[in-house]
Length: 150
Image 1 (tube, rainbow, N blue to C red):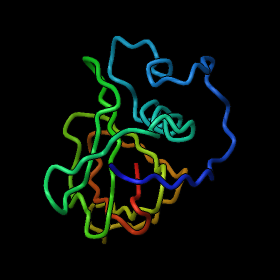
Image 2 (cartoon, rainbow, N blue to C red):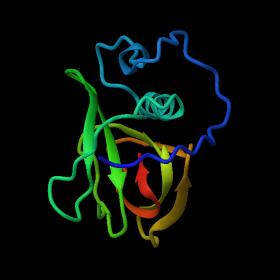
Image 3 (cartoon, rainbow, N blue to C red):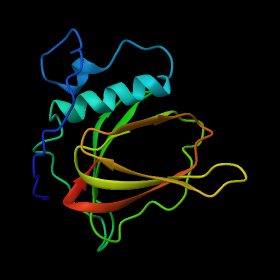
């Protein structure tokens, strides 16, 4: 199990109506796929409220990222990902899916591919969130934290 170092640096945001403190209470009614902005808002609320705390993360092989499924239904999957030195996704897209994520602990570096340009690089710290549609190609990698979590 990963040791979690709490770094509460989230900017104040409007709370969603339901404050029961469960992931299920944050999921909007949906008969469709969520937009990238809705995915980002959901990830940010889970991270900001600490709803990932106490989740057991077990790597499947040595030197691989550990992860845990936090919630799943027919249209949504939410994962907690752990990052340590040398952990990187490599460049990838998300198929036909929209995506949103938020850094809950530590620091990650994201590189985004752009047509006819060098990859755009940014450092993501606790509270930083991103969203993207199916055309987004990026790479995430560990920069600091024991572990970094998103």
